[in-house]
Structure formats: structure tokens, C-alpha cells
Length: 195
Image (cartoon, rainbow, N blue to C red; front, side, top):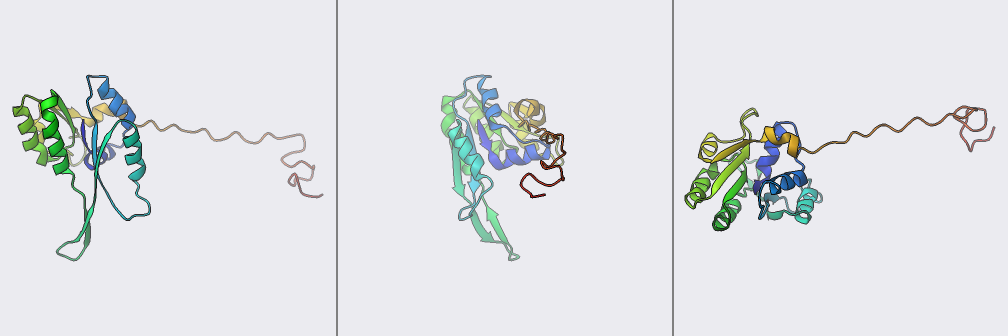
């Protein structure tokens, strides 16, 4: 499994669900022999709190091989500060290195830049499934990547299996009313108030 973190997050978000990464890994591990689950993401350095840091730490401790690098900050032609964190090269190198040891690659990305990568590993005899979505507006998968893949899996069809289940907590029951009402002294005051 090769997961383009930012791309998969955006695809799931566009479909209205969050991914449960334990269910994702376990579900695909049950379908065959899962050798590795790689997760690629750029991290903003020098931030007191990064919203992605808890996810990265959890994945690292729960069966994922994390591939991260710091984002780069630059100023564009119109003077706006931009942050760049592209992980395409890291993912492509790892896919090429693993291609001789696997018979099937699962690519969780819709990035059209990966079309040539998919073609290259297919020439080595490796099947490639691309997991992304065409059901978002706009579609999150590039048409050329979808056509090149041996198999395209619509992310929305996996939602029932890999979506995080949000447990709704019931509100606490109302306090039990004693014979004297809500207070304890018969005057409607609190327990420790004097009459």
C-alpha cells in the first residue's frame, strides 16, 4: 500500500467521511499478504502544534511505514507566502524499489503525475490498483491515471468498510430529584448554603 496522505485525505473529505486507518490496513491485509503500508506526508516544521502530528504518530505505532519531510516555504511571483510539501518523488522511488518484491501495488492517490510510475511497474509484471474517487466535484483522480491502472477502486464504495465510526455519546441523565427538590435544605439553595 502506498498512500499519498494529502491526496487521500482530500478525496475522503470531498466525499464526506474520515478514514479509520486501522480498518483500512486491516481490511486490505485480510485480502492478501500485505508487506508494507507506506504513508507519505509533508510536515510543517517550527510549528507549536501541527494538526497532522497526532495522526503521524499513531500511524507510526500502528503498522504504517511513515515517510515524511519538512515543507518548504517560498514567496510566489505576486509576493504571497506559500508552503510546498510534495511527496511524489519519495513515493515513486519506494514503489520502484518494492516492485521486484510484490505482485500487486495499491496506490491511494489520484495524482496524474503517477501515470508513468504505474506504467513502469506494470512493465515489471506488477498489477496496480488505484484507489481514489470520480464522485467528487471535481473528480479527485486524473483520467490518465485511472486509464493506466489495472484496476480502479472507487473510494466511496469503500466508505462502509474504512470510514471512521463516530460514536454519539448520549447526554448525561438529569440529576435525580430528591423529596426536597434540587437543593438539600428545602429552600431551593445549594447543599452548602446556609438557610
